[in-house]
Length: 106
Image 1: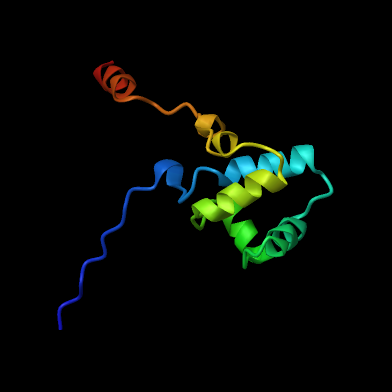
Image 2: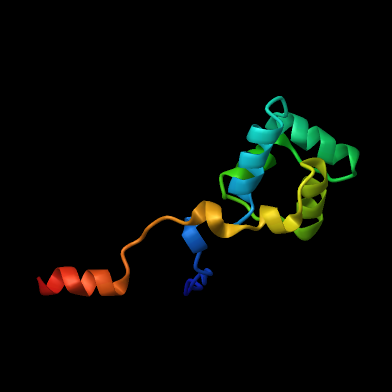
């Protein structure tokens, strides 16, 4: 029996979501008393079946976030979906191909 090859999409910044770091940052900076469990409870009150562990995995970039969850999280955190999707939190200096070529040539 031949194994099927698993095709995976490349993960940008080695995560499966963009919003996770922003959710964590906004939750901890603007709402220091709002725990992951508290955020999950507020989402549950809006009819979204979610647990503290799922919030933890979202913030760690280990699971995806659907659009309904994203809109509800934005409402709870009193922010916009656009701010949650802002990639500037991921801006880390990486060596470019040009940098690599210069270093190799030296």
